[in-house]
Length: 108
Image (cartoon, rainbow, N blue to C red; front, side):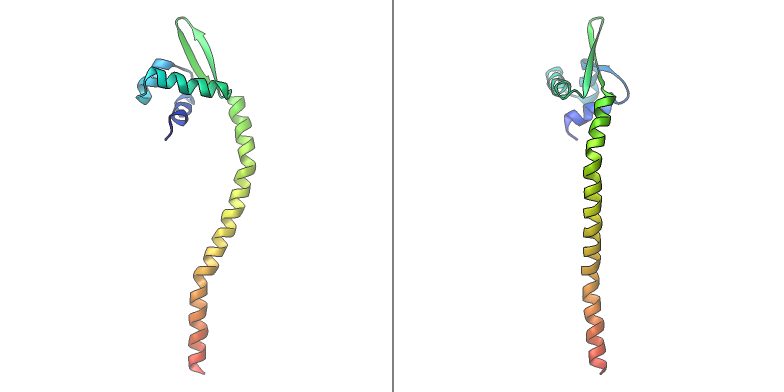
C-alpha cells in the first residue's frame, strides 16, 4: 500500500504528530513530512500546532467531496463490469451450444 494511503488510513482514527506517524508506519520523519506536505497541498489534511508539536488530521469535507466525485466513476465501472460479465458468460456458454448443435446433427 502506498505511503500516502497508509497515512490517510492512520489519520482516520484521529490527528497525530509527525513522529508518531513515522513510528507507526516505519517511515523516516523527512519521508512523513514530504507525504504530509503533498496531502496538505491537496487539502486532504490540516495541521494544528499544539505546544511544540504539529498534529495532522484528515479534512472530512474534502474526503466527502472526493467520494462524491468518485461515485460517478463507480457507476460507470459497475455498468461496464456487468457488461463484461454478461459477455464472459455468453462466450463460456458458446462452446456448449456448439456441442449441442453438433450432437443434434449427428443424431439426424
